[in-house]
Length: 282
Length: 304
Image (tube, each protein chain N blue to C red):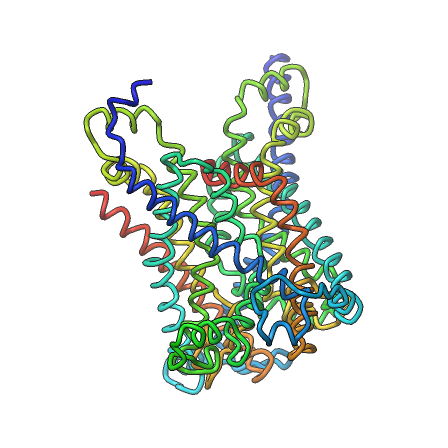
């Protein structure tokens, strides 16, 4: 390589870079470590001398109380259900809308696209008052669909933006060839475009997941019964019930966080590259 | 003649099929989008001109809600706006530069680049509510990490009731908020940095440019569109903050840390003032769009 002609930065500078990156990594990992250790401790340990060390007695009963009293298992399932369905619905709607906008030629397609892009700037709070009033009048609060439908709607704009980027890379000649072979617009979409758009699924999925899994305001306002709570609302309720007992709260935080993190650790390369694809395509 | 007719017929059939396809393909998206976003916003606009408790008909009061929002100090809208803007300031001037620095350093290709990248993105994946609970444990006045750390290093006089003190409450919200999303912006910017042609980087360095000069004169100008998006997200995100305020301070002490979203919720559930709630919604939309346009304009100006 010709790298010897390049100016190498001074070794001391390099060390500083690594120290800086290392410190930032510790700052990012520490809360996860802290959460894990105090989820397994009793109050005496947390409040006593052993605040940041590994637990001396591994108190798994904290997890039992988080699951039993705190219902974290149910809330986890609720979050998973709501998020998965919202991602599925918004992805399908985004793919279809994107196909109509970018692959079919018509006069107002640009306008339709601009219309959907409004959703990128509109805050989720903007619609909360009317939606709440209508849902409560229609007795539609406290259902899974109360959250699934708004979440799908709010993930839609980003989904369309990302899909547009991916779809523009599929050559138009493919569509034309399919049409000549007698494939209708619907057939072209399902048989040609959809299978080629698979890489977009994971990118849209990552962005929508970040939006839905952690959403708190709608969940907090629209869900008041304990059966349909999602994780964020469940944790808030649990922390209200256990104000002085830290262990079970820690356990609840671990239950809410670790499954995601474990999946992330195994797929982190794929997840970050999906996210990056979204940034480049968007 | 027959043939022309036939062609016309076929074309007509095609047009109908096309129109139908456009309609069908747009339908799910439009239904979702209009029913959850556009129609409710129209209702919000309309209801923001009413004194309305959500269930009666309400009375039309023109722009009185807007006037009251800015003049009635007990609503705390000005305070909430100020808090959001302070948060936006820290996001733009602390969070984004840090994210950019990390993105540039990683973009140069350091050892274990992917590992660092993955670790830095982790806080983004954790629910804000979880982060809030964790920080509550850090801020706890008696047993929290922060105060005990200060005790341990003999700085006991700096101890505070962090989230309960008017002086430190807002800061206690800003720190975790800024921290959590550094990774998000870093990854966006990193994507841009990696998108820069490697030849450009090498050519500049062959000409004797240092790594910092390459970053400053080549990389940053190229990733400007991404920086613009980041700034817009950071500012509109600050205007929309809700989660950490609800978890850490509930808008207190003495409503000093209210943000527009928590006020909005209070209007619905504590005061039954749905008209005023709608007014706050409308103000949020206006502010988000105004800032987005302003930022876009500012970036354009710099280009010229």
